[in-house]
Image (tube, rainbow, N blue to C red; front, side, top):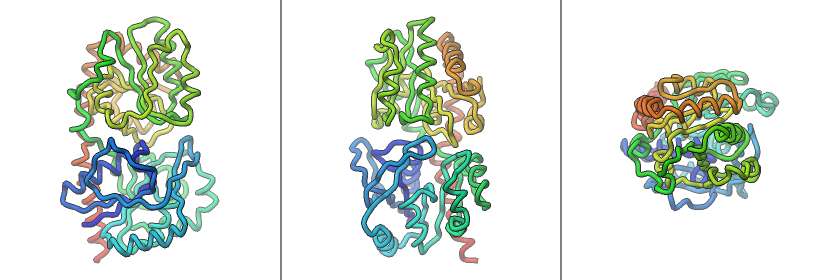
Length: 372
């Protein structure tokens, strides 16, 4: 089947939705389907290889939303351009990611002439926008033939405003790309243990907790460093938090998209201290790489990790909780190894080959229902 995948997020923009769209499209093509990614123009990313066709429309602009930097597409006469794509491509399925995000998802949903599926990726406590415009949005919401949520938390968030049926299909991970024996970054292969963070440098990802925790850890030991991958609007703020006395052991790398598997392989511990999450793709990547993960306790991660078995959930958001968990793992190579092995086994439950088949099976179910 021909699948139009609509997303505001794709490379070079990094994040969970980008990874989801990229890996699902590759797997869908491997399964014999014809995926087409439709997104806005943010520029090329030479580090990413794909043989999936990409249609770019309009320009992507950043806006602040829900503790993160969201994106919207702007273009003169965007509606006409969307209709032209729909008429020309004749999709069997139109799959829209984050359907309530203006503007690209809205226009494709409005003008769709085929089975339309929406995937909801976000967990949030409340939304003034959805509360204010609930009635007109309900009609838009009801126009979706199928709804996928990546976790039960996403369903809970949406059910505050809109009732409907959802299929829970989690995010996946490429277990062949992220694996324990990936080549390491030689620069960081010495007698120091590597604590690794990867994510956008923005408020909800909680990097300030990790930096404060690392300061605590370094009060008692000097055998570790902190490696920070990713970029974002708070980079200067986070760099200013690092005391000069340990600055040589805190490395801000910026974008490392093409070598992510190598940094996971180099890490001794992966720490992701986000305070808001519906699902953790970077956590899943680290688990696939066989690394012990440290994160705060929250429902999204409790559904993925059994603390003490295939990861460590260290309680409520506080830097001392992180520091205690990190110190315990740094002190015990045996524990790190055991948790890492269990983490890899758990990650295999989320392989993209399994997840993509679930999504395609849902498409086929919707097609059968439409013919009844």
